[in-house]
Length: 242
Image (cartoon, rainbow, N blue to C red; front, top):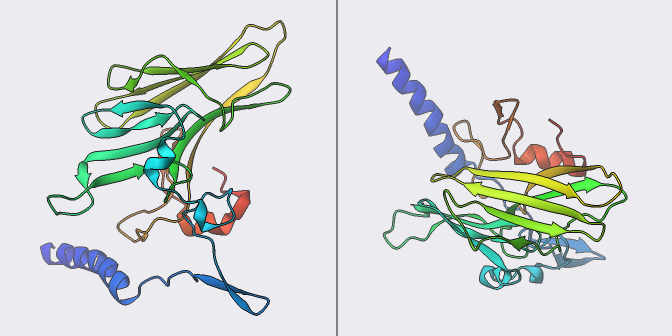
C-alpha cells in the first residue's frame, strides 16, 4: 500500500517536471506578416486601450497617476488608487520570488498601464444616471487601510446620488468590500453594484495536474476551479458564464 501511494505521488509530481522540461509550451510569435513585411506584435502586458507596446510604463511612474490609500497589514503591503477605486498595488510581504536572501517579495497586483497589469475594481451599472467610472476621483476618509481600520471611499454625482465603497482587510489576506448608494434626489433610480478582477496577459506559470492556474471563484459557498486561461482565451469577448 505504501509503495503504491509513493509511486502515485511520483507519477503526479514527476509529470509536471517532465512536461515543463521536455515538452515546454511554445512561445507566442513575436511578429506577424502584413503586406509581405514582418510587423512586431503588441506586448501582451500593455494597456489594452493602447495600440503599441510603448504604452507599458514603469510601475512606480504609473502609481503616481492617482492619489492613493496605503494598504498595511502583517502580510500585505500596497495601495488603493482613488482614481477609479481600484486595488491595483499589492505585495505579499512574507513570500519571496526566490530562495535568495535578497529576493524581492512576490507582487500580486499591478496598475493598468504597467507591465503585467492585474487589479480589482468596483462600480455600478444603470441607465439614466451618471455613474462612477475608471476616471472618477474618489474621496477617502483615511490614509491607510489596515486590520481594524476600514476606509470609506465616497463620490457624489450631479444628480445627488452618493456612492460609497467601504473597504476592510484582516490580518491575513481577506478583503471585504461593501458598496452602497444614497439617493438625495427627488427621483427614484435603479442601479446595481458589480466587482471585477482584470488581468492583462497570461500567467507565466503553467497549469498542471497538481496546480490550477487561472480564474477561480466561490459561488453559493462552493469553490470553482473550472476554467483555465486556455478556456478564457477560447471564449473570447463572450466570456464564461457561471
